[in-house]
Structures are given as C-alpha cells and as structure tokens.
Length: 368
Ligand code: M6R
Image (cartoon, rainbow, N blue to C red; front, side, top):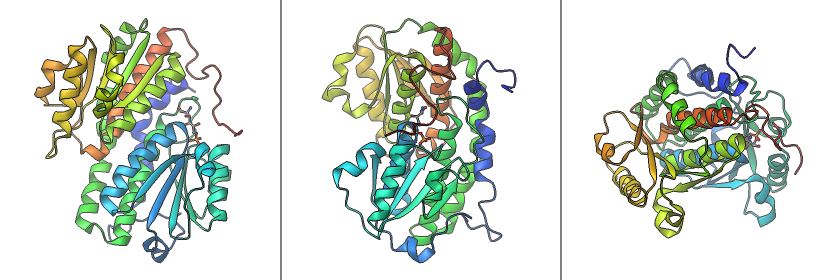
C-alpha cells in the first residue's frame, strides 16, 4: 500500500506529479477557455466581487499566501489571508461583495468551518478549495473547487498542498478570465506552464538522494532557518512547518527582507539556512535575495540554496546548491517546496521518528 516506500508521506511526495496533473484535468472547455465545473457562482456574481478573504490553517494557510500573490497580480482584486482561528475574533469587514475562500484539505477543520459559518451570516459568498468530496466545508459553501490529490494519509500535508496551489492558480486565472483583467492568450500561456509542472516536479524528485544526504548531515542541528521572498516566502514557512511537525526541530521561516529587522541576530556558526531563491527576472527580487544570503553567510550560516538551473550568480554564496527547473516566480512554489518536504521527511526518519504519525498531531483538527 505504500508502494515500496517506508512512509505514506514519502509515497505521497512522489505522487505529486500525478496529483498535480489530475488537478488540472478537464479544466478547459472545447474552445480552450478555462472552466471550473463545480464553481456554482455565476460570472455576474464573480464580477461583483471587490475583495477576497482567504481563510485556512497550517499548510493550507501557506497555500493561501501564495494565492494572494497570484490573484492580486492577475486579477487586481485585493486579497487578505487570515488564519481561520483568528478570523471570527477580529470583527472582519464582510458583505455580499466579499468572496471568502476557505482552503482545507480535509474539509473538516473546525476553525475553518466556524470561520465560513461566520462569513455566511454576513452575506458573503464562500468558495471552498477542498480535497475531500462531500466533507462538511464544501457542503456548507456556495461553491467548491476540488483538488484531486487522492486520500492523504500522512499527517503532514504534501500532495494536498501542491494541489491546493494548483486550485488557487486556477481560481486566480478564472477570475481574470471572467473579470477580463487578463487576455485569453496570457491565461492560456499560464495554463500551459501549469501543465508542464508535473514534469518539472518529477525532475526535482530525481534529485531526492542529494536532499536525503543533506538531511542526514543535519540530524544533530538544533535549529534550521528558511528564507524566501515573494511566492518563495510561504514556501519558507512551509519548509519550517514540515520540520517542526516531523523532526520536532526548532525551525523558522522568514521573508528574507526582514532579516535585518531582527532575525539575523539568530545566526550562529554553521547554522543551516535554506534559501528559496526567486528566478532571475526583471525586478530586483533575485538580487536582493542574494544579498540576504551573503549577509547570513558572512555571519557563519551554512547556506543551502534552492535556485533555478543556470543561475551561476548564486554559486559563490551557496554552501550547497539544489537546482530547480526554470519556471515563473508565481509558479515556483510547486517545485521549490518539494526538496523541503523531502528534507523534513528524511531528517525525521534519520531521527527515528514516526513520520506518518508525528507526536501530538492529528490528521484533521476537528476541535477549535
Ligand atoms: O485539512 P486542512 O487543510 O484544513 O488542515 C489544516 C492544517 O491542520 C494542516 O495543513 C496541518 O497544518 C498539516 N499537518 C500540515 O502538514
């Protein structure tokens, strides 16, 4: 049942190319336009939306953070991302023109369920992004986009996360199509890029041995930091969460630009810092990230850099370089998070932990 893997989690990591491909299936109409069958909200209802609030917990919350970058960029709609457990308690401003997007792999997370119930009392429309057919959250939502990860057994979410990202990109592109903020050609181009992601993810999985060696070298680390920028920032947060959950290790993710505002004081000799380097582009993101990496290295950090292939500018500052396929910055989380999942899985295995059933955690958190 684990397909020869030691853990369900490892099996599920390796299923990700398939899970992403399945989540993209059947999303185009005959004319080539993007279609979302279970959308259930009319084009007019979607055009009336002037604000989106994404609510989710844990890993699903990080998918929501990536979604914010995509939706704001492609659709020019303001997006807030909020932890489900905090949402109701701050008197959020909601009305019929607010779309609340609830992201939940299980569809049963109590905090998220209570948050959508609150949103509906305020007349907001609720769209669920969910992996579990017929679960409570999609049943209580106005619309749903199902991810097609298949059952996720490992407590740590992996393929659930990647397919949530796909659903978020599809939602963003669909809104752009309906609202006319992007042309069909551009939407089509991104869809094609998404369709090539399963191959890119497979290419990253082929490097698993390199990541496993790295994980085993760090089995005695006391603390691991993760840095990212832009869509790589939620990836850094997710890398840290995986390590906390599975290896019971102190790990934190930071936006690289925040280093100098405090976290750089944490850096000690040989502290591992895993850095998600944005692709080279027209903006200064990539170069700013490199200067952040230089700063931590100058203070003794051991830098592990995840950067696109051919990016030689990173080489002088990377103690370890893990290359990623060349993909656009918004889609980079789909490939960049994979080595971080493998790293946490292997480090926890090396420590002798139960990777599928980490201590103190449950697969779905049905209490508030
Ligand atoms: O089922 P959900 O997506 O609503 O679950 C949310 C979190 O409980 C979940 O992502 C949790 O953080 C995972 N254990 C992360 O690996």
